[in-house]
Image 1 (tube, rainbow, N blue to C red):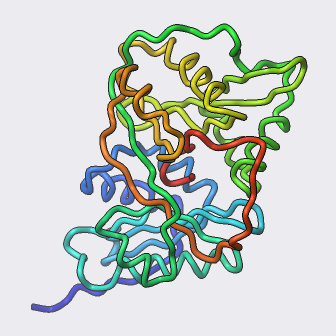
Image 2: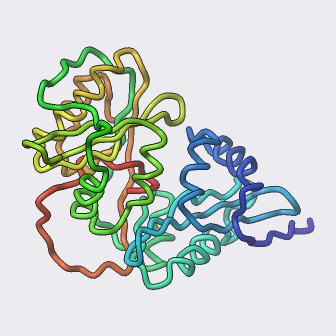
Length: 279
């Protein structure tokens, strides 16, 4: 039987419908709008069999120092032929000298290890229908009088790279909740539509209590809705999220390639990811 010819090409806007179809076939929850947001922040490569999309990969740059490698999918008919490696290698090349971060399933872990990625921590997915959650009094919505650079700076401190473009995109998708000390924003959380419901993240805070209150504030307005939250395992929020109706439903391994290895103790931490794709 003749093998179908597959070529790699730049990932352009007219490929998005094919990418959505591919991700749905793989069981992913992403809507076209979810793809569009990530694609708009990224560079990518597409695998084509004729004019049919059979593979995708994106590289989302965060300033000049860091990137996220994401949305790597290979059509079931093309698996086992090295296409995933070719796509991943192609977007790693797009990253240049940047550190590359990604999240890996157990199936993808061996490939990424061969490409130089090292596991850093576990990421846990919580999702479900929100139950009753009390509204904390120390959290409010980000308003017209607040300065957006304030929480961009908090995110840079927690994440270790410039994700200003991501936060500009998130601001178009949904509101931010904030914790203030006097006139200063010291912690924040974002929420937006995603997949079959909504997602909360990122959540950046000085401590777990602030993170808990930010999540509670957002969830208190979403009773009965389907919500997803991805947390680093070390956030230690799993039991709380389960009590609020969001049980643990799987996870992935966070990995990095080209990390500096410099130790740091930031004054703020990321307690909830923006998404598995974006960290």
